[in-house]
Image (cartoon, rainbow, N blue to C red; front, side, top):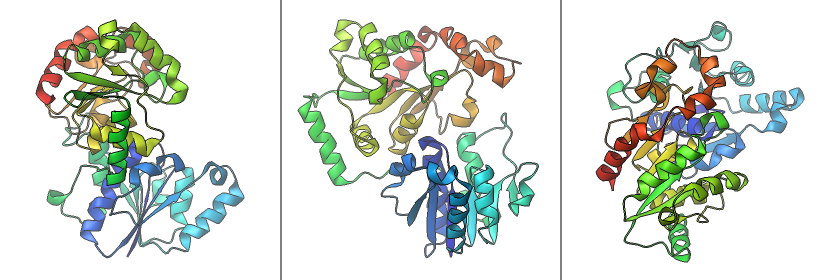
Length: 355
């Protein structure tokens, strides 16, 4: 049996969708399972024993009809029996309809029956969720295959090699990270401005974290974000700055994963870094953007190891009954009203519970 999972979009999406592979390989151990994603997301799939091949859909292919149709017919030549399209956009609609797969599974849209023979209706945003809707909706895509819902594994996993771990440890030694301190990773910046907690607010969050005298603090940011990272650092007190290893960064995504594997907890903006931390079984404290549906992405929330906060938890009157697009367009001003003092006690509780 041959199976193809399609998940375009960002790292967090790809990582969560890997749970489909984990469950399918358990059900069909002799199957070949391929995973299609964008090239910048492949690193979170490395080492996963439940994925046989990773197929990348590049911008070059996506932006040329000729290249796309050549790609589509190459996919068809694999003769997949099962295709699960988590993404469900035009390019993956076309890949699906020409794939020749017996099972073509995706989410219901008004036109989806043209491309898929199993169309699953997502859970309502207000539905009670077991793992977080982002996870529950993915597991829903397995329903047509009659997998035992009581034995499904909902937790994504990252795999770190011994060499990667040793390289991370060597980096810690190089930067003179004290071995007797707990290590806190700060997810400093979101994937976009509307998902980035205001820098002056984030500096206060870092201050709260630093109140634990035994911590070492690492910042997660890309090189092109160094100016914003420096602003947060500069806003911190001198005593807090002394606990921050500002330049301890991974050279690539796999390096970051290995560094995260050496940390004790992760705190900060919702996004790929948080999802990778969870996949390494690290406790997480998430600050959600006002426009993000917390019920979707507050995965595995238990009030102990995984805790999240949202403006709606404290000032629901600011966003209740306001259209989602309007909330997103006003995210900057709404974020400013989401003062860190509102959840200071929850950060302290999280730190005490997990360090």
